[in-house]
Amino acid sequence: MSMFTRMKETLLENTFLAYKRGLFAGTSGNLSCLDETGTKIAITPSSYPYEKMTLDDIVIIEAIGGAVVEGKRKPSSEWRMHAAIYREVPGTRGVVHIHSPYATALAVAGKTIPLVLIETLVYIGGDVPLAEFGLPGTEELGAVVAKTLKSRNACLMANHGAVAIGESLEQAMLRATYIEDAAKIYFLALQAGGAVALSDKDLEAMRKNLGN
Image 1 (cartoon, rainbow, N blue to C red):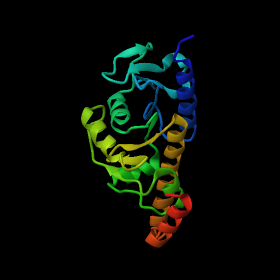
Image 2 (cartoon, rainbow, N blue to C red; image 1 turned 135 degrees about the horizontal axis):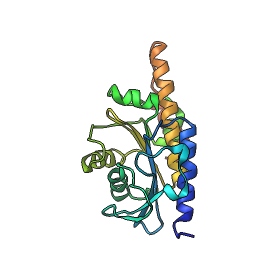
Image 3 (cartoon, rainbow, N blue to C red; image 1 turned 60 degrees about the horizontal axis):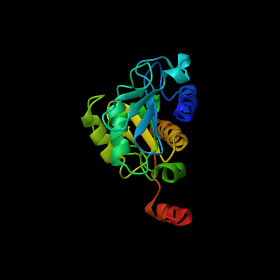
């Protein structure tokens, strides 16, 4: 048994959950988690169908440099973004990159998700900002996303999708789910005539109740 088996199991379980929830389609999107030493990353493989994925398809790479430590497949083409987030946002142990319809639609439209739901404050820390465009798979994309995530637990990615982080992969997965939920509700509210953001007074009261 590999020393990375538990990491792989956690990653595969959450990958199937994200796929089941429709947070990405085909072979898009990617997930990763960081080991306790902060030196190894377990990440989904590049361009491989989720419905066929097994533990053997998960790839273990070096957090610095991306060299493959274990695995028969290539790591996700977005491994540089994952590595940049772990490097630049202390405490991050899980990253979930999604291409869900509503969140991606807002990202394509160049929109943010304003603070219209209590859940967004609780799980994401405020509104959902938009990271500027960066070419997929590049260090540039990793830099702009990591910079945006220094003040939030999730963000949209211009013309691309969205990403959520957490102190565990499970926490990142929950936040990714709330991104799409908030995006859908906000999108539908706009169709219904508009969306009203929570007032500063209400936000102050909620933050006080949350102990922030």
